[in-house]
Image (tube, rainbow, N blue to C red; front, top):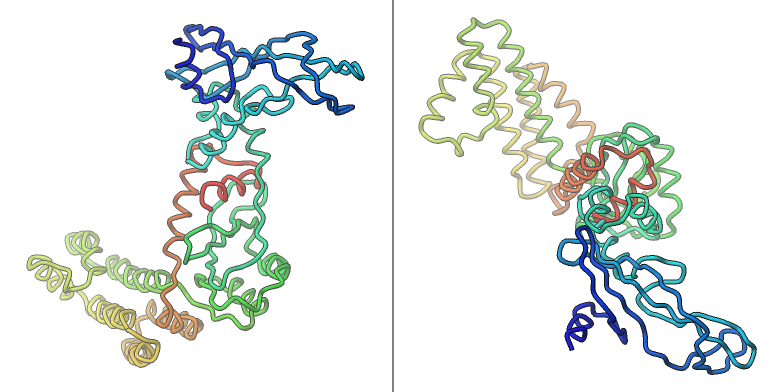
Amino acid sequence: MHYQFIKNLLLLKDILVENVYHFEDYCEVHISLPVKPHKCSRCGCITKKVHDYRKQKIKDIPVLNKPLILVYRKRRYKCENCQKNFYETVDFVGRYQRMTLRLIKTIVDRLRTNYSMHSIAKDFGVSPCTVTRIFDCLSYKLTKLPEVFSIDEFKGTTDKGKYHCILVDPIKSIVLDVLDSRSLEFLLNYFRKFPDRHKVKYVVIDMWSPYKLAVQQAFPQAQIVIDRFHYVRNCNWAIDKVRKRVQQNLSYEKAKFLKYSKRLLLSRPHNLNHDGKIRLANLLLTDENIRLAYILKEKFMDFVKSSSSSEAEVKLSQWLELVKQYKIKEFSYLARTILNWKQEILNSFDVPYNNGCIEGFNNKIKVIKRNAFGFRNFSRFRTRILHCCS
C-alpha cells in the first residue's frame, strides 16, 4: 500500500512503483507500466504480446535535496501481424531522452532566474553541458514593434563589441530585443525589416545621436522623447564640474569643505533640514561661481518640474537667458546640448513614458553577466536576457 503513496507523490500517470532505494548521493525509484493494447506503428494492428524488457535510467526532479533517478522497466511489444518490435508509449519522457519532460521544463523555468548554468546544473544533478544544450533549444524573435518602445545601451563583453543595444516596451515592462550593435547603419537595417513601422508613435531614447537619426529615418511619424533622467544628470554633472574647478583654487580647509558638500549642491533646498540649509548658505558664500552655478541648477530643476511642454518652453527660455548672463562655461556647454535636443526634451513633458524600467533591466543584465562570469557568445547572451526579462 505504501507504494501507492509514492506513486501519488511522483505525480506520474499509470505507473507501477516496484521499489525505492536511498543512496548517499541520489535516490532510485523502480517503476514500470501495466500491460495494455498498443497500435503497431507499421501496419496499425492492435497487439498485447510482450517481446522483451529493458531497463532505462531516467533523471527526474530532485527529492529530499538529492537527485532522483527513475529506473524504468521498459517493455517492448511484438506485432503478431507484421512481426515488428516497438516500445510502449510513455508520456513522461521524450523519445531518445534520458530525463523526464518535467525536469526539462523545471530547468527552463529556473533559467529565468539570475543563477548561472553551472549552479542550476548542480541543483538538478545534471551536467552544465546538459543545461546548455536545453537552453540552446530556446529561441526568441521579435516580429512586430509596439506603439511605444525605449532604446538604450549596456556594456557587453561578447565577441560582437563593447556595447549592445536593448529595446524595451515601457508600458508592459518587458524586453523586446537585444541587438549586438548601436551604430546608425545597423539600427537602420534592423528597423527597416518591420512592416508595421508606421504604427510606432513614441520612441524614448537618451541623448545618443545615432538613435535620433535612426528613429527619424525609420519612423518618420513617431515622436522622439528624451528620457528625463539624462538631461537632469547633465545638469548635475555641470554643477559638479564647477565645484571641482573652484575647489582647485581654494585653501585646503575650504577645498575639503567643498569636496564633502557635493550632496548639498545637488539637493533641492526644500529637502534639506535646518542644519543643511545653514551649511548650504555657508557653502554658497565660498565662491561667486558656486553661487551662480547653484542658481542655474535650481532654475533648471524648476524647468524640469513643469507640467506641460508650453510651460517648460517658457522656463527653458528664461534659463537660457540666465546662462548667457552668468557666462559659466560648464553651463554654456549644457545649454548648447539642451538646444540641440530642445524639441525632443519638450516632448517628454507631454507623455508619461521614460527609460526607468530599462535602467532596471540593465541592472539585472549586469547581475546575469556577473553570475555567469561573462558571456563569449552573443546569441546565447541575448537569449538568456530575453528569457529572463520578457
